[in-house]
Length: 124
Image (tube, rainbow, N blue to C red; front, side):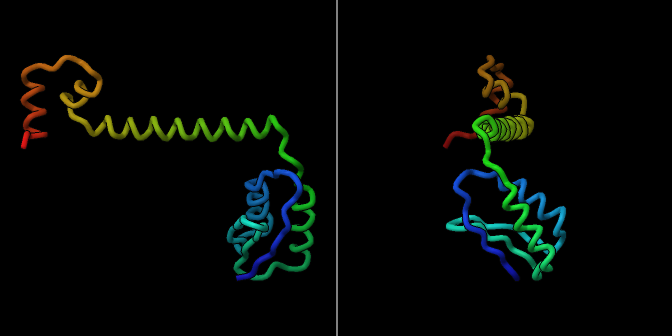
């Protein structure tokens, strides 16, 4: 493993764009990045001097995320969470029987529904 450590900029940058650039331009030797007190770029093997120079240029070219972009990223994350929530509910709802669905939705239950629920969830 080989790593290149970068000092943080004085402003926020969009790291996924750097990661995508590295995947596209460095290729399979790029294996990811880690971010803590500094930004560490990880490689399976040492990049060539030209690739290192290109990486430095790309890092230097990253500009500050504008306020509108920060909100866009936040809104995208909220939308992704909502999509995941709906997906989980849909998957769980699809696994329920008709009586369980009625119970969950607050619909009136017939005698057959009650019997089905009592069979599935017997009282102790």
